[in-house]
Length: 68
Image 1 (cartoon, helix red, strand yellow):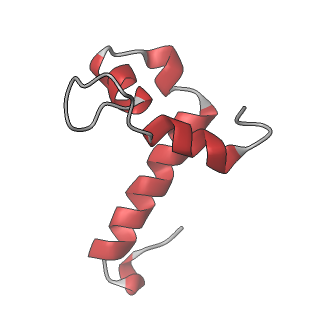
Image 2 (cartoon, rainbow, N blue to C red; image 1 turned 135 degrees about the vertical axis):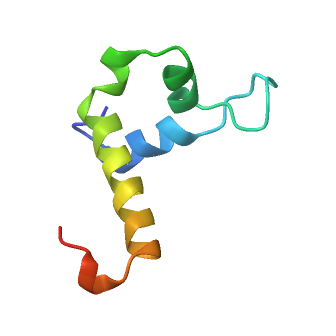
């Protein structure tokens, strides 16, 4: 799926699942909680984490300190 629709893949990672187990149950959270390292090492997960990290860094860090 990632090769054909990257944005769709990111949405699947963070879409809340209808398990009623808590406020934020997503495939990403389940993989993190279960330490599914093969899943978390996939390009899709790594790219998503990098996008989140850079986004947070851009929000909290002056532009002159950020180098991409």
